Length: 268
Length: 268
DNA sequence: ATCCGCCAATGGTCTAGTCCAATCTTGGCA
DNA sequence: TGCCAAGATTGGACTAGACCATTGGCGGAT
Image 1 (cartoon, chains in turn cyan, green, yellow, red):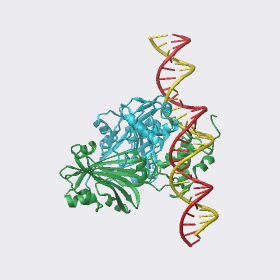
Image 2: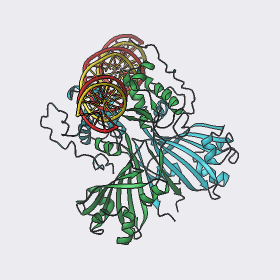
Image 3: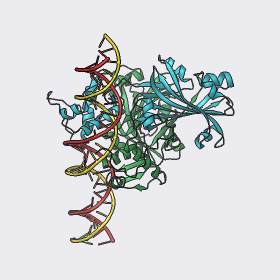
């Protein structure tokens, strides 16, 4: 299920070449008429080698690759960077570079995070980073159909699966309608259960957007990844049975570790 | 030469900035010890300045920024690169760097591309890149529930909206069940209309995955973007009323130009 | 045996330059 | 006026090297 390297759409057959000299591995020459940067050819070469290895195995250091392929370390780093972004490699300062495990698939559905992760056979946990009532910024106010600066409850959590950081999530709720939800979340782990049991609110519909953003240094720190790596930003607004907006959620997932799946049906 | 004189880049604000993402506020930055690289501060500085400008306006050249902020051109390029990835800037070799228009939102739904784009007030067109019957690769065979190497019709198209390249799309269909669909598509533009009218097939359900990949040189060329820029890879499998898989589609969208939205409802 | 501090190795950041490819400008020529 | 060649300017690729921060192993002290 991890396929993605090959079988891309319009990928030029490109480096389906023969590497003749084992000792001095050389970067394949650019095909005639195609201007392919050196770092890109190196990347393809490395991708091939990585394919032979198992997740967790180490690959040579940047300096070694630099001399082995007779390119500058900068060029090696550019190739490695792209492989990291694609989720093929993981780098750790001071330790080395390692083959990454395959991407995980997360379903877009109107169920609780806890259920989702448990259903995939992993152990879900959360760390509450922040719970405060704040004046609604304009975008939050718009989504929740409140006045700007109306009090909203913000809940910020770090989501983990098997103790690995998975996403940073910020939820916003109407602080008047859901008074006390912040305190309640200090001792609860499932917001959806709390809404159902304490506030008699059930979510029936949601709109979720997905786009690519880049990790800030602190986001990178929390997600245990690098600054500037692509993240997937999911923005969700959910409505209850009376079609009132209930929650507005922003979640940041590592783009190199996750993919998302949505189930569509014919419009009515 | 350890710490050289700082240029105009403000020192790390690092405070609880409500973090500035293009459309609206991102998740707040926790002040946990995160070292802020120079290129990142420059990026934030430039983001601020860009916010004052209108799409299409030019910003100073890399060499000018390099001297203005007293950093190397490499550092400027790293900052600009991230802003390009985030969809804030567009760069053109030989011309300059310009403020990018805002991202476009594309809905994930089981309707035809032509309808979708037209509904958003733009003019949809397609360029048929390739139409051939080929032996099914293993992933295609799996999705379409066929034997490996069974004949499948591949249709590869470049999707445009208002003449701007939007996505590269590859569709796979069972070549026996939909015999002649390749030829028919030479003179038609809507596959879904063709399926409905010529093959009495209506799609009622689909599963769509979204993940981040990077543009190869040829993909970058077709989408009029840069090699190595993040793309959003959408993979769709659709089923008909008898719950038979009909199509398997892979689409590549520019991650800096598009976001996607899905509508979710409560599971039954 | 255990702990701790030093140190080598790793990836992360940054510099100051070179050369190349694409584009725009400019001026001369028909 | 219209065209084209030459040069200037832009971003793209690449080099060789420096210093920093983090990590983990080794060896000595306890």
